[in-house]
Length: 292
Image 1 (cartoon, helix red, strand yellow):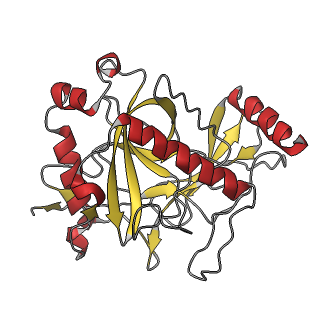
Image 2: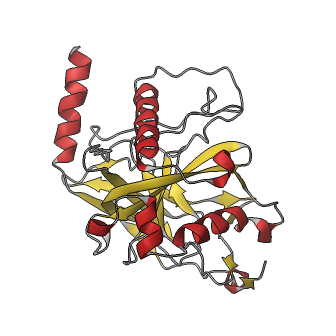
């Protein structure tokens, strides 16, 4: 009981904090890391220290922006680095980029993660499917182009259950509460009304974005049908419960292929000095437009 009360007080303290960023290394290289910085100067975790902030009545929660709309770099909250900075995904020693699929350029939404959630890979979530071991992904569909590391309060509108390399990888559809369209959007039907074509385009993009790399189209659970707000709120809460078990050291697995996320959080007074280097040039091939 005492540990639970201390955790509650710690969460309330974090809710009152302002968040900043500390960057080291060169963007678009393996050296790049962007850390969450608290208002007292210490380093925290985008994954574990930004509050979920779920309000079921208002259908809102917090979001950490990893990739601004129309950009190509595949940045994400690291599961393996202490304090879970935002880093660029590296494959075969090279930074990863998403391809431009006509008529889009890079990511078609402000793309990011819902903090203090975890798609657990230990037991089946849907028949034959386990989670992808990451925080919940979310797609912010508002008009503004966000910045990496922005922490936004967003309104939840629905979700799409992507199956990526055999793992369940939810995409929560949301909009910045400050966007001018937010008061008009309550359901996915409203999105279709005020943003015609966006939901179909989103599904198509997630289906096809890996095709230029030689992979087959992605598949979806529920025959590719979007899930409504109520179902999505349940998904967010379930993934928050899974995260709570993770940080409480209640998750055990004998599967050698599963490496659980690193849990190193604020509270140790660790500080990192900014050391941002000039950006590494983006490879020219990233500019190519792919026609599928």
